[in-house]
Length: 237
Image 1 (cartoon, rainbow, N blue to C red):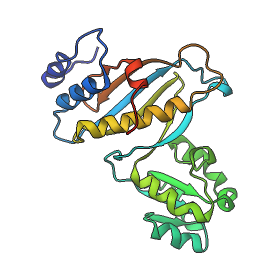
Image 2 (tube, one colour; image 1 turned 60 degrees about the vertical axis):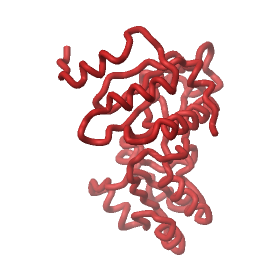
Image 3 (cartoon, rainbow, N blue to C red; image 1 turned 45 degrees about the horizontal axis):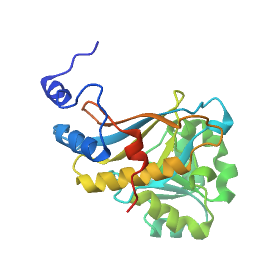
Image 4 (cartoon, helix red, strand yellow; image 1 turned 180 degrees about the horizontal axis):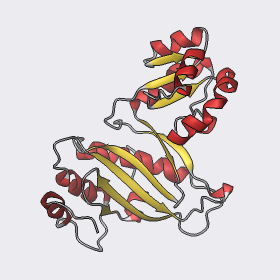
């Protein structure tokens, strides 16, 4: 069993065993327990009743967090012609086609989100084995394959706090909702927005309870169990 330091054990003592907390109380607790020298990320971990082995139970979607994630997002757009100027003008760090494709094939992955126009998908299909493993492959289902006249919006969304959520092999969703330095209300706003997107994306094939357990945690701190009913009823303001 892993040994924890005094700081972690002190934080753990503030969480009552076998208790579930409201979103507001949980946010307050994890913020107080984030005592590292760096700005810890606060993450939501949801155990679902979905079975990722079945196509009609796969969960995948996006959410635009109103207060962002606290992380600087580097955006790359695979495109050609006038679309390159549109992408760069909207704030993308990188835009282009053949040269960027070659760079990625060579192992360069210094970006956090990739967007593509439909006409370029044939060229970048060979990057699937590289980008797919990192969750960076453009995909129409996640809004990252867009026509040229929609590039500016897609880039701006990626900068605002666009996050992608999906099931892992254990039917769990892991997703950040912000940083420990965020005000409590901003974290609650982000959590409410994310929960709304998750519930709307509930797969049609899931029978019984969709959400089974939920935990809020920081990078270095213990997890806090959330009341499923409470977080499911959060209102997006």
